[in-house]
Image 1 (spheres, one colour):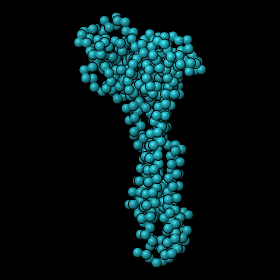
Image 2: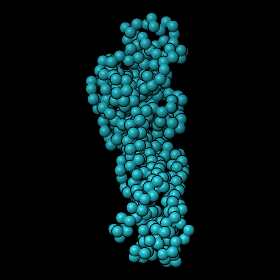
Image 3: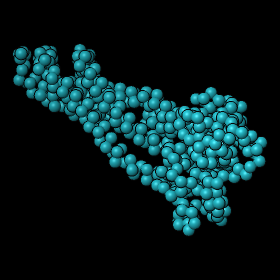
Image 4: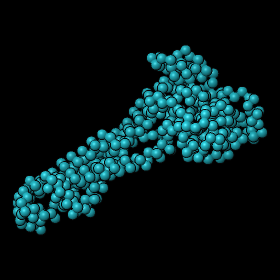
Length: 422
């Protein structure tokens, strides 16, 4: 068998031009299939690790997926907000252990700004109940202090003490909407988490109120710049509304009861969601598209295997002299059959291996870009059992496909003998 395998390899090298094209077709098809599968599973695990330890998220009535996306993943914007008295009522509930309000809506050079309380750093967890840790500095204490995520610090080259100007609304450009008269100072840099926290600028809720003094109508009052910082500090900076509330309960067994009571609140309309259930709903929405992409990828692999079959079939007539010479030096028809099957198997194996290598190189390049732009780490995209199963499946399919031209060559070798058919 080793002699036939060696002969199959030399035969492929003799036709390396067409073989390389076939290898490329198989590699690209395998890379597409694994890319879709790894991106799907990696994104799911990355999303799932973004928040943990939070039993409920409360916001204004909207879709549960929408509430999850803008409150946790900083995607989209809230359609309405929760009043401060309502937040206080929820925080005072006997079944609530802790409540962390957040306020969104401003930005800094394309990064989201989130107003919150110091309790956020104590109670917000990610991954498997991992705490947020400060790589440098400390939590904000003064009105115009900020704690920034790891990506913000890296991309903007910020260090402790760096000044920063927040912008009204979202987007890269200010368009005259910057709060230049209310500069902030970086006092803390969080350790990397692989979540949207890395792309967030954290300030106090009072700071969000302070920078909007003079913006009460939605547009900047020309006299706003005349209000001094000392005057602002003398104001009551308690926020009127918050965007959402993260809740931790004293007993997880009350989660359904608490959610129902909040959702049926007779006062201000509210929506409470369970993060894991909202994520499941998100995946159910995308499941059809995921299955469609996987089906297309499988068909592409089938096309790659067919290209192996086509390559061998088109060369059969040209190789009848070769087969006759092999028969003349003692090769049996079974050897001819094994030779062509092994050639197909080698092309399938090498093509699949090249595709696996290609997708891992691509993910190594794309993964950090996805994390930098969206704050979502593609977890679990390294080498795994799926790679081995795909390699074996493609190799097996190639061996089966190679059996068709091998059988044709087997029959011809019996009939041709030493004669040459042109």
